[in-house]
Amino acid sequence: MKKTLLLLAVSLNCLGAMAQTNPIITKWLQNHTGITGRHYVSGSSTPIVDADSANVQTVLYSSSWSYVRTKGVPAYITGPFLDGNPSITTNQNAIFKMPLTPVPNTGTLTATSGGDIGIFINGVAMFDYRDGVSWKASTGALAGGPLGGMGDGVWNRDAIVAERGGFDCSKGHPAMGNYHHHQNPSAFRLDLNVLSTVCNLYVADALYAIDSTHHSPLLGFAFDGYPVYGSYGYKNVDGTGGIVRMKSSYSLRSITTRTTYAGGTSVTAGPAVSTTYPLGLFREDYQYNATSAATPDYLDDHNGRFCITPEYPSGTYAYFCTVDANWNSAYPYMIGPTYYGIKSGVKVTSITEVVTPYVSTTTGFDTYNSAMPDVTIFPNPASDLIAIQLSNLTTDNIDIELYDINGRSVQKTIIFQGTTMAYFNTLALYDGEYIIRISTKDGVITKKVTIVK
Image (cartoon, rainbow, N blue to C red; front, top):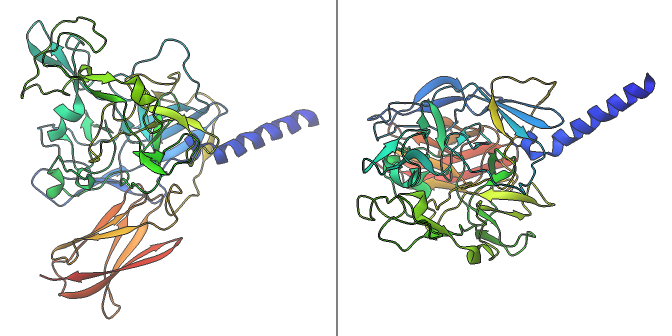
């Protein structure tokens, strides 16, 4: 009996130790401060505060699985969706079951599919490149829906190109309430070349801000259990060579008609390349370049590589959210068109084994970067609005205060967990010099700003 109890205690201790080190258990943004979602409606720049809790609700684990409970609601402001999408971000009441130990797939590879293919650390769903629409040659028109199943499946439309007008400032949108990202989750307005003006009125951030000087943060996990990072990493797989942009090994084909695939296979014709159907509108407009993939900072055909990362100092296979030199999303965007590992992650309705809750104790800033972030204040001088942008992903709420030159606090705001930005409305303030104070567990940052109307 004593021997049995001893073995049980050792087993539980080992399981507990694993929970403290395995990122697929420890790196989720658990909502422990009551943050709720917010959304814009078309025509109003004032966000509506929602009732549903944002970010991940709870994390539980067993010896083989991590279970992530989430409503699928981010802490950053979602909407509006200016393509006529009538949906808004709604509670998904989801449980994602993710493998603790991912396994490479040495057999027939599994293609990504419409709908969920992974989950971000804030509990928001990952989707692949597609928008569920493909060219239906029998009618000479596009056919399909949000989750696929229609059309002929030969020429599959790329959501990033086709649905750009329907993405909010955070580069996301909902499918029947299921808010998701097909691409790198950094706001349009932060790109070096801004492709959408939606942020002009509906200002928002997203999960993180691209920083070309630091390894990008861990953003989530694919359904095969392997991590997904932002756009920058170590140049060499052994963690050396400095920080570089991770590059896609896919490029657009040099074609004017759509009658064959990249490998030369003849297929039912799609529409000819034109201003109506530009090159890049379909996934099959791209070709994979194996020569590029052999270069250290280029990725393989799954959009990843085996390498050292901050969370995996011994190395792991990792996907990266690819962007071009202007930080605009680059195909295949996150994962795909096939998974590297065996796809065992899934969304479930209940947990059917004994599990242990994991309580996150991490606060402050994500450890991918220095403890204290770079802070950008804009515009400065300001007239009606001051935005505070952090370079780091926050793992806890960050208090921000605005002081006048006499040291009196005139406004307070919060940069919420899982976001990077907050605002002060300065319309009612006098002209003059002000101080912005950012308080964290790691210290205090102060910045001077001028208000001129």
